[in-house]
Length: 177
Image (cartoon, rainbow, N blue to C red; front, side, top):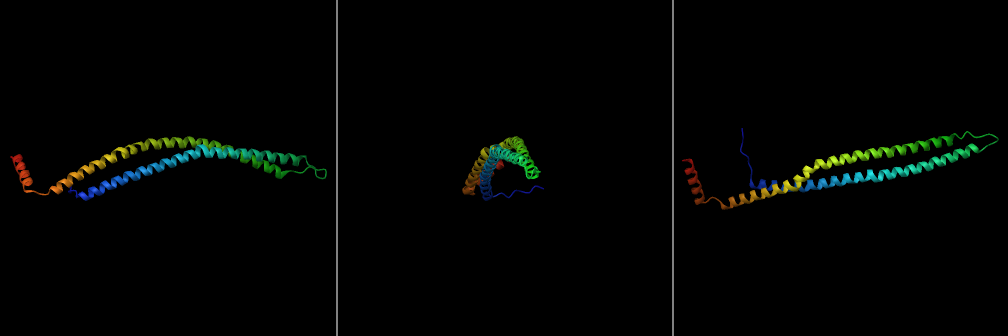
């Protein structure tokens, strides 16, 4: 069964205040999320590639130094015998491996930039409807609630008067006939 709603003027005022707080908080939250998305995109598009390009340069330097050490070790003779240069060969292999790893990371970052940009665009599209609601519907609803409250306050302040009640009952009885 339907039961009557127990809505008071005070509950409408509370609802209007809560609606306005919701609008402000949601707008602020969306601004924070947008800022975080933009910061993350900036980091992925600018800082990460720059970092890995610098790492690649450092790795090229390491490979070059390791090659130089290996070559100088191979040219040395100790007691008429050439050393094995195992440590130098291992260092060169490690340096080449680090270089390959850094080059792979550049490719990974490029892929993630594309994915992150797509996700950002999708987020922006999906949030557009909420933006419109926050910009238009929430203020519109608050204005409607304000009009309702003003009408209810006027109704309550008018109070019951003998003339209003008899005129209302007269028009009601004439409508019934």
